[in-house]
Length: 277
Image (cartoon, rainbow, N blue to C red; front, side):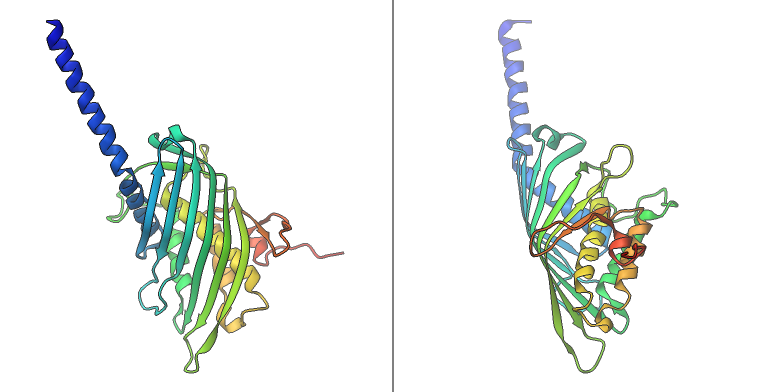
């Protein structure tokens, strides 16, 4: 084969590779955004949208803004959860591998609206949907809305700051004013599952949501009226158990910034506590 022909073929291959890399580079934000939306929506079984997502392949940085989890059908409030900014740092090389290694995961700003009607709460509906992740008899055929087998995430620690939860009672004729509970910081640990410690986006959502709710409900005790709370604490604990410890260990830091003892979700919500001597 002549040298000039080899050179032309090499040049064509190089151009194709450059085009492919450029296409991936330009499309990665959109691909990742869709993956997050579909994974969260599959886990929660309610519409989920993400405003924006920016992935830096070279720096290993992912920034997400405005993750909105809509209410299940029949509830009136604008949303169930709405996030501020996710700041995520990953090992750069892992972004193109099967398992993304997360070194830093922080969410600043989370707004929750917990709405109670005569038929129950919006949170209860979501918790019921999450319980299926703990079932051993999973169907062989994937559900129509189940995301295709994709990347997994390995993350050991998630920090959630500036959480505001609004408890709204619409079950009576005389609507009680909303009660707001604020949690300065939640730290969620022991998130992984299996030998690899890696999870899909849907599994990550199933593990983190009960942990966040556990921290909120702990702060709500004594502040939010019992008729607004109902048995939400029991439901959260049952869901965490159903997904096999999905909520992991949670450390809550109060206003003074002093970390409290690490507690499992069941204990955090009033389970087996040792009496003070």
